[in-house]
Image 1 (tube, helix red, strand yellow):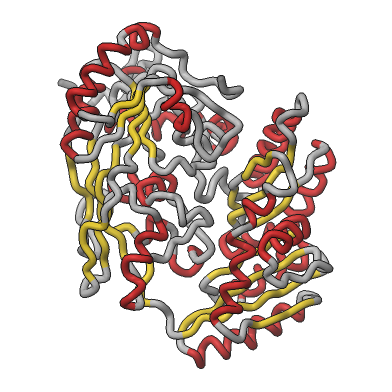
Image 2 (cartoon, rainbow, N blue to C red):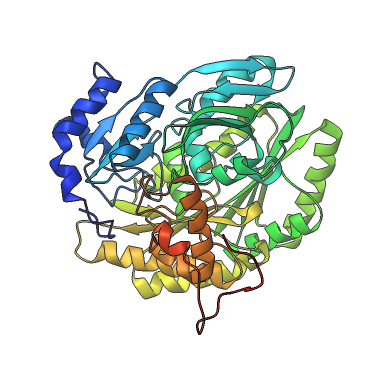
Length: 498
């Protein structure tokens, strides 16, 4: 069971398990329905492995029709559904429910259409993030958002969490690179939003779906924008005697009007872990390391390299190296891309947090984070998308030591509250899930949360899609629709009512 409370399982639904299995087997024949406990074990958690819960049943549809029929059956029979991609979510977004069907979309793994003329690719949601780039790189194109888990994470999961990556500063998050989707509502209805065209009329429902964490519908097809590979790309490796110096350098680069293709920062524990893991040639005598990538025409890149070098020197840079080849540039990034598994070698367990702050607050937040580390008695390694202020503190702990998981959670909650306190937000790309769910009131008022839940009700009136995630207290749709009567008087009494 999980330490974080989830909706109480519906005993009546659990009692109907055999009946539900039979119904789903009629929709997805063969091995598409898994109900043996041993075989379901790989689905009991996602990337937030501190929490585990066995699902009621796992179903692996292969066609849109099957997804539609499964959701319609669950809607008509009041069975909860948790959509799941590759399971790399770091916020518990794909954590199963004891009384719910876990719907894995990983058999939807085909590239359906590559359209270089319109610079668009149509794929199924189970295609990996890196798989899109692999499909188009022979023509000099690529898909810009590149989370560290891009070799494994699915594009459907990227949409659910609005994933970013090291190049999101210049080229945008998932929401800026998705052109259209096909999705299935909980009622089984199949709809399309957007397409290859640049923009759509009406409400921005595509933007609403991106980052909706599986609470509004199940994505069955995705159209993404692809970009041409830049003519030139070079990177600077810059070391600083303190994280505060590095943070100021980040702010100064952006303030100068320079938007790098990517700008990433690591502190000393992360630097040492990454270097031991990858041997990227990182300096070990610095407190902070900044990787700045500049891309575009060669003349522009050369000019910007000179400007960034001068800004770094004005911020006490103690180490500066500029890539002279594509191989060297990729080596600079290899350590950063491997930072998460590298930290796994120096600590039995860690929680990977995700919060976003205004860039100018970086020095203050990093200093305060060191104080929190001492207060909670746990180490922390910082790896983050410095350019857009998206922090990824890795809180180091040992789950086998009593109380350390609780301390890690408390430490993480304090970091996220600090992000909100300085004008930031609870998440940048990992989503809310269960990890940050109970912190939502620290950022939103009760009325804010109710208004968000009204959107949920418009798509899922029975709250069957991924319940227990995002909202700390989920109100019934009927409650949210009640009219407030004050002292016997209706609001706006002059409006005709039917």
